[in-house]
View 1 (spheres, helix red, strand yellow):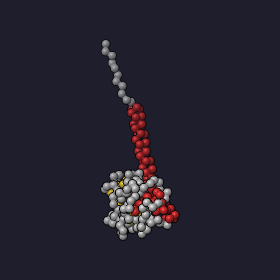
View 2 (tube, one colour):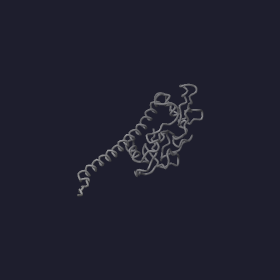
View 3 (spheres, one colour):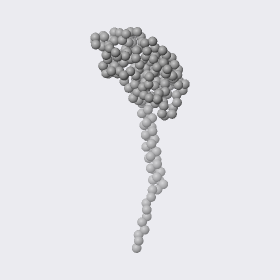
View 4 (cartoon, one colour):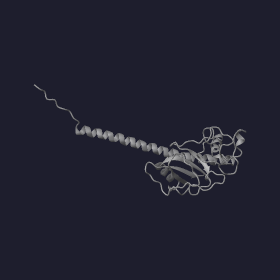
Length: 222
């Protein structure tokens, strides 16, 4: 005599519970990603604010610009000094050495001087990275001995942060300036590769494009 076996299947209630759990997990992941992005935005703003505070603190203490400071030998005869001409020779993306030598650009010496003065943590002239693995650096205009305007008008010292995702770039510009990439104290350029040159030919876009794939370099004047 054959025994009839009943096959067990998932009830609608069980399926609904599984779907709810999956939804909660996905919502938690997405929410977590947004929280991480927001934390990185705050970190990027802190980069600009912290270096700006260090710069003005250095000026108040020594009446000089870090990197360009001709009195940097106050920390020892071997410390490389600037030429005091108020121009930051070099670009934000220089290949700064681990130890400064006579030929080290002033845009690298900027970090050396700020660190020796205690305004920035660490040692040596190499630039730090931001939270998106882009360089943080400074330059005057296009970095030439006689600088010309970059990003639609910057000829003084600017700080640049590279490789910023579009969502982050928009948030930074809105929170630190006017949200317009080609105007104000914060300006940007769309990039195709990491740590691009900021030179005389660099142009700022009229608007940001948040596609999820665009990246920008943002520069802010001191």
